[in-house]
Every structure is written in structure tokens, then in C-alpha cells.
Amino acid sequence: MSKRVRMSPEGRREVILRAAVALTQDVGCIDSWSRQDVASKCVPTTSPETVKHYFLMPDLRDAVRVLLDK
Image 1 (cartoon, rainbow, N blue to C red):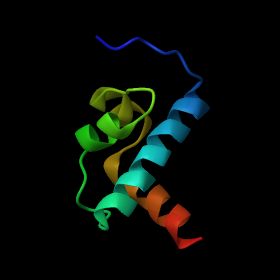
Image 2 (image 1 turned 60 degrees about the horizontal axis):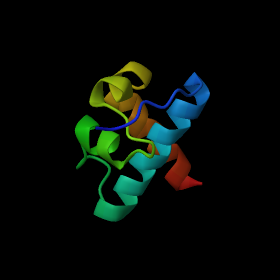
Image 3 (image 1 turned 180 degrees about the horizontal axis):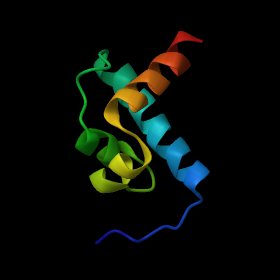
């Protein structure tokens, strides 16, 4: 059973975004991961519902593109 970790909204968004960037770099394709994949990659563990709460998938993919284009 995972332990619940309370974070600020900004902190949680950062965790989700870092996980999505890492997945994109691991897989090599921004369109190949799901909300579940992102949630599983998050540290601390995050649920797919939390990922959905903070990002719509197109917005998350756009944010990853911006970060990787820098």
C-alpha cells in the first residue's frame, strides 16, 4: 500500500510534468504514453485520476514539447 503524500498544486504539477518528460525521453515518442504510464512514473506515486485533475492529455503533451524544445 502506498503512502499518501500531500503536496502543493504547483509541486504536484511539477512531479507529473517531470514524469511525462522522463517517459518521453525513455520511449522516444510523446504520443506513446498514457495517463496511467505517467502516474506510475511519478515519484511520489500518483494516481491516474490525479494526473487527469492537473492536466488534460493534450496540455500535458504540449508542456512536455515546450520543455524538450528548449
